[in-house]
Length: 154
Image (cartoon, rainbow, N blue to C red; front, top):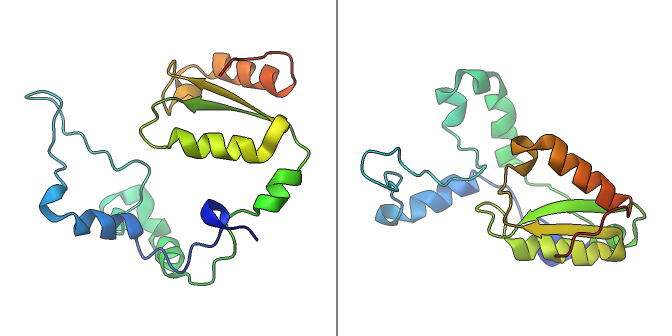
């Protein structure tokens, strides 16, 4: 097993994002708007909350599974840093310089863990949705990087 970010979760998630949001009290303002009349900025990232199984019809069938996962206590290691470090696959990743969901430093640390096998394309050209926004361009570039056919300075 590994340590740090690659270690154990340390118990059940227990709807962690929901608990953190609630702990902010008045500090959490989901009504913040970029300009008057615009929709609220709800930067909750890719979190799942306990109430979503009730509010979203397409998630209702998954609510029992979500409850089980939120209560699960016997999680093993998320990642094995040693195994990742000695793997053989070449990889390429788009890392958004100012991604609102993923800290760039975490992506860079993962790339460093993989060593010379990893090629990182660090850019502000795309945000978190780069593969969805321009799938052909992003996929073709990442594939070429993974094969060593294209070097992207980062």
